[in-house]
Length: 284
Length: 317
Image (cartoon, rainbow over all chains, first blue to last red; front, side, top):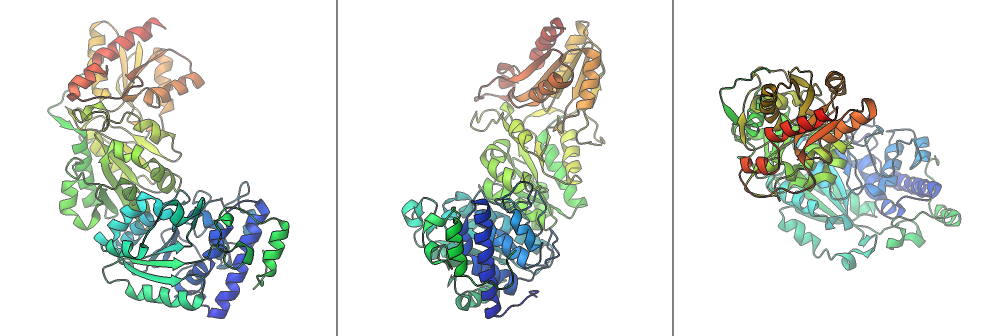
């Protein structure tokens, strides 16, 4: 059971608050990655406030819980905000993001024991392997819960991703739902200009995955896709969701450009952005 | 000089295989992963008797390290197996981020380390692995000397919570340590007490140090021989206690001088007890094809090199 099980209106309100958190966090330290964080807000809000069977009273082993891994660790702001809003730690701690002696490192880490984080990520391409291992451990433990992992599309340039892409179907890891944030952007420009990804649907399918596609910025499309993915587990194949998103979604002047991959808004830009996002509960 | 009788010679990798198989029987959380080298790593017995806990990864070492890190999250104790070269340099970033920095309970088990891999040549003969692994925070680094010790070490690391690099090799070497030994991580083992020089050796060089000790005894030199099976954490207390007595040191390892055991000992001596040190190891070069014996001779990783180093260091006292 999800401890919140929000309806769509509640999810939307939470997403707006999470977006405010993201912008304020990166603005405060003038660093961090707002673009991908804003683009993946609906997904993380959906997982933690609707889909996943999880417990904010964090335990590393996560037995009989659904697990989430963030492979593209640079979008840590969205994860930290969602974890805090879900009760893993106090929202006030979001103010320490990227500062000295913080548990909220620039990229997610376990070293400082931040509740909700099970492995360090940031150096790309490793999360699918980790999630697959965690899923296999669940099978060995006769634990029926699921493992989710999010990757960036630029991250698919990494060779290790394709090692794991081969492994998971070969070993019938069918308690695994992988999601690619298909925003079409990476640091140096559009993904297909930097390194052509081709037909990702056909690629993952040919590796033996069950592939779904969705709009990651629309709860009305995203939630049914996540439900469908869940219903397809346990059938011998890992599940891949190619999730189309717009980098910077929710802030008009940030949308659709790789320029906001790793750049924080200035004071005026922050104010302009916050005017577009209604606070659901309270800013930290 | 004490005598070290032995009845058989065996490869250290078989000690790993035997230890792993034993763990399969005694510890249900132990799982094994292998990157297409099951036979070379002697993991066949585990695979045969515990197939549900054995994971064939194919030739994909980066994925193997990530999988192992993930399995620890479910309480498993993964032992990964491939050659030392592919266990370290090839996957350094995966080990660094997903295992060491994340503090995961992964046992990275590495065979065919050093020049004694032999005929395959330098592409496969890693001599930098101890250095790479010891530099990583949280990592424990172990390099046992014979079959019995490798088996005991394999069993011992399953009971230790945290990342471990376990290094062993391919050649058949005298199996002279006791079968019933208790392996204590981080505890140096004094093989022979002596007063003239401290010889600290690791891995295959431990037996060479024993052979050197006999030659030195004939020359009237009373060598203290200590087996440093754990490179990190280094048993500083045991090393300093020995050196305080002998006042000079020789290190011996099948590894680059840069970054190896001798390098760790040099740092310790410089900080705590600056006394002369001579180092036996590979001096900033790659290996090459040849038989293990030929290579140990050519790269001066033998009793002759240790004896020379002792003579040199004693003259510096």
